[in-house]
Image 1 (tube, helix red, strand yellow):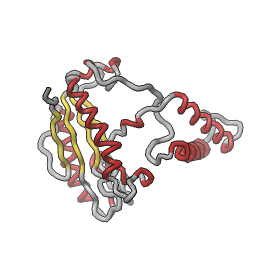
Image 2 (spheres, helix red, strand yellow):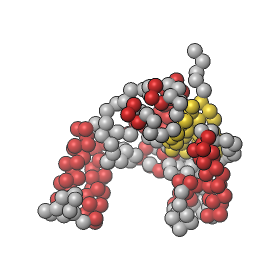
Image 3 (spheres, one colour):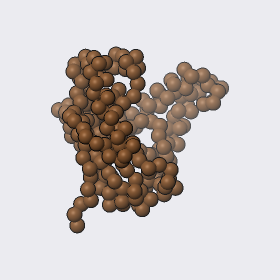
Image 4 (cartoon, one colour):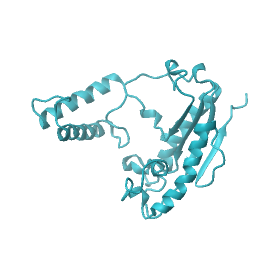
Length: 231
């Protein structure tokens, strides 16, 4: 979306709880993590490389790299592997005319215990990691000529200790009863309840896909159009 080369490849985009601060990483950091992965893979699969090692060895090396990265970064949120890139300038004329909807879940950071505030409340880190960066991006996109809507999901499944956590929108959009069976973030909520709310959320997403506007929405989902700030 931020690359001029992508102009014309798509008309609309939905950003669901995008952690913009960790979207990419510097090349030097990626190379250091690559060396750790190579060293750990050599332990789990001596004589093999990433293309020849068995699945179990690759997964074990990934796990070890993830643990090492958590020690290096101090973050339980940032994944060890991701795109390598440099800072991209604010969205330019190439986003003019795009329809973009972005949003987050009210308790996104409850899934990352090491990132919570001192009292265990996910509200402050959720604001810092998701709400503020995405809101700033939305304003930049509007100024560049995109049509922008923002959403927030406040769904807290009954019996779940995670509340409106990161990825809690996914069972409302994708998958089946079998796919989400025993998911801790759904707590005691029955699949019938999940599917009922899911129909409403899917209708909002589909309306946006078809028209560029989410249409009518109801709690626990809220959505609003982002207008350009007055000069």
